[in-house]
Amino acid sequence: MQLYLFFFLAAVNANAQQKVILHEVVGDTIDLIEKIDYLLFAEVEDSLFDYGVVFKEDELYVLEVMHTSGITTRELSSEAFQSYVGNVEKLSAYYQQKKEEGKVLSENSPLISKDSIPLGLDIEWMSRKQKDKMTKESRRYNSLKLDADEIGLMGFERKKYIETGGRMEFPLAK
Image (tube, rainbow, N blue to C red; front, top):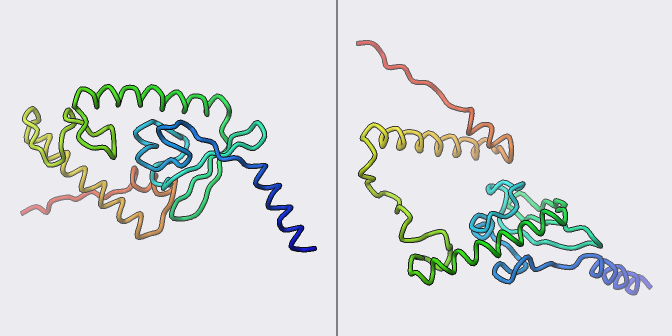
């Protein structure tokens, strides 16, 4: 009897949630690169997103986000869902055009193109002062990010720590 009840509840639950394919380009499981490339799920921070799956329950869309600290679910309105479908359609057409023009360097991410500036490139139009400032800010950001990870901050608290944290260094008089 218990076994029958288990299978009955599993069948009811399977019918209640149906995986939705957002678009054939991304499939039914959207990873972080696809989220970024196709401007999906802006309400979820990239740092809290490993991959996501959209389910449809009756007339409601539910986004289930998997990340290192667990699973988060968010409701999506029909308008938001249709907006994300539109993003994928428009951007996939754009990326296809760039691919046909021969400007795409990587199949993994359509955003990486020949027009992109590779990391470590010495940008000629930037002054030395601008380059030094950019390098200093990058080091500061990465240091604060590592500190936040060591402290164990997640989500908004992590973001707030990185954006507002820091220290001032005053040179000693000689």
